[in-house]
Length: 159
Image (cartoon, rainbow, N blue to C red; front, side, top):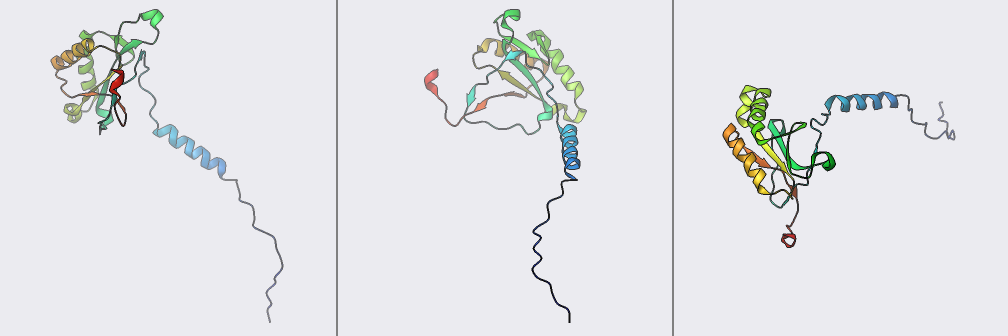
């Protein structure tokens, strides 16, 4: 008659960590492949204005950005507000060329859904923004978005 042995108390075996480096490298390669690097280096300071009612853009791949703010290197470029298109300063007259190049870079079926997002510093006067909007209108870019920071309640005391 068989008898069960009791009393051998070895405890639980340790967890094998032999496959841990494989898992870490697999995760590293996954993030390297799926992560998109920053496409534009900001050369203007931007602190978006506050807003309480905001909505997210659905297809960010169809958004082209125009940055307006004071240059980061104020000792080289001055303190006058500047327009940044891609990685360089631009004038308002360069905006139609920018819009055309952004359209050409997208698929033909998506061109009518391109949205131009204005990332404007909260301290910038509306004159330069109005000039940019006029140039966008002339270039046929009618879908315009303003980037903001979401806050729960606006503070009108600082205005």
